[in-house]
Length: 292
Ligand SMILES: Nc1ncnc2c1ncn2[C@@H]1O[C@H](COP(=O)(O)OP(=O)(O)OP(=O)(O)O)[C@@H](O)[C@H]1O
Ligand SMILES: [Mg+2]
Figure 1 (cartoon, rainbow, N blue to C red):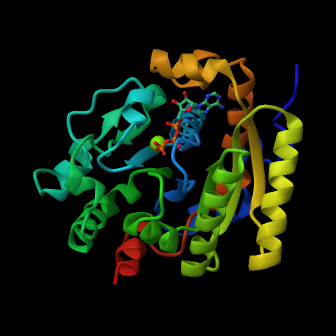
Figure 2 (tube, rainbow, N blue to C red):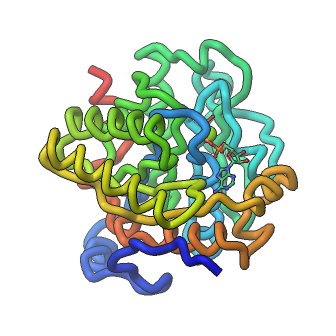
């Protein structure tokens, strides 16, 4: 079997808490760690990666919240086999609180859906985003890890999140179009937040050679034009088990846990930066400030 999960560095065993994390836990009340997931280009596998990471981290005993910020075009509920009654639109419109909008998924993870088919949600105003961030802030006290799945593009909400994030996971294809858009997100992310730590997952990759060539190309461009480079987090192969899992509405890590894609996603879920992605002040407060 072809091993495509190469390129991973310094992984922590699932139950081992890094020293810095342990010290922080002992010293003050905790807010959630937050990881943003984005790509620039559509259809690169952000939602597949986000939902599987959420399940795998919840499986390890973490309190995980997945926020589907592909507002108005949300998919995560479908990939998790859930039918949420409420979504981000419900909160934006002031019809209810964030806690009531959560729905429970595999291993107890909570999903806040982005809603489907509402134009206003897909293009939120600054005021709407401010209201949303304020409503989401208390959730940071109730979870260990918040994963934010973004839509394609680098809109207002995505940029505010990147400005507030410590950690971004870029999910791209190996093709030049995907790499080009991922480069744009990397560049913009570093512009709005020079301290942003960026990891990269190459998804739906046909073979090791394509992954290697794509990574070299991306890294060289980043180094040459931006003077920095993302961390290589993993490579997920193109695998029919993923399409089958999407059809079954069960994440591939549960649907076909021994598949090559599931193995690779498990490795991505062990990325050590996920354990250290907590910031000094609450994420949604900083995201709201970034809107100004
Ligand atoms: N590793 C893979 N192997 C095979 N198919 C895959 C893989 N990853 C994703 N796919 C397929 O690609 C489709 C799109 O994936 P996904 O919805 O995660 O992309 P996305 O980046 O979230 O898209 P959008 O930009 O619309 O939010 C999935 O429905 C799945 O069928
Ligand atoms: Mg998506």
